[in-house]
Image (cartoon, rainbow, N blue to C red; front, side):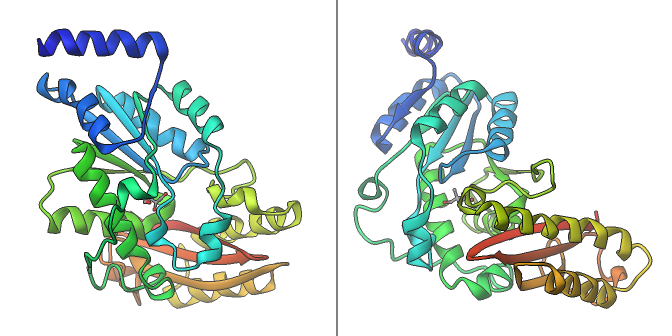
Length: 298
Ligand code: PAF
């Protein structure tokens, strides 16, 4: 019976492509036949406004798993700045086309009421990983990320979940949450995808004016130059190198640049302090807040 249901489900998917689902109940029902048949399920959580960076996560999940669920939900609890939430780009029709071309099985696009039928009062705290850098500047942000990602994990129960390394700290926080809650989900982090000029792909890039976009190219350019510079200079000198270049660049305002241990996210003083050194940066180009990072040692 289960195999018949699964066969029928696969046939239907082949005929009509990816299925869009809006409720947790329907999602669980759609996944249950696959699960009973021992199929591997991959989850790619997103907030929509998809680009080639998301596509790389979806393609990786399609490669690794039998079923790929992509969630598209702009999560209000992770926005500490309400203007940012209001201005967040939406493009569901274009997202659906992109996901179909990548081979996703299900698009889960719930409403706010579906994900938060009542306020989520859970509090997630993983210091120091969630208290430095983005955690220090965006109060409540990672708590909101953990709230929604844990709900998505409960709804989908994936074997693996895929996240982009552009949000380097987010991946570390989610790994800490998975360990804390003993969820047994493998977190797969995928490399940053960049535009031709080097700008890290982000849904926020579409909010940049042509001038802001061109100015923003200096972020990745500086990070790449700093990687060469770091090979023969101290951590403090490399820090200064990046700060000065962003300070001098047209139209950019540095919020922070930190060179940290890639696991603990604590600042390092010497390259010898770690075998995994990452430089994490947040810069405003005009009013648009952009993040990026570079690995100095891995
Ligand atoms: O990285 C994002 O797009 C979001 O933070 C995530 C992981 C989908 C949670 O809303």
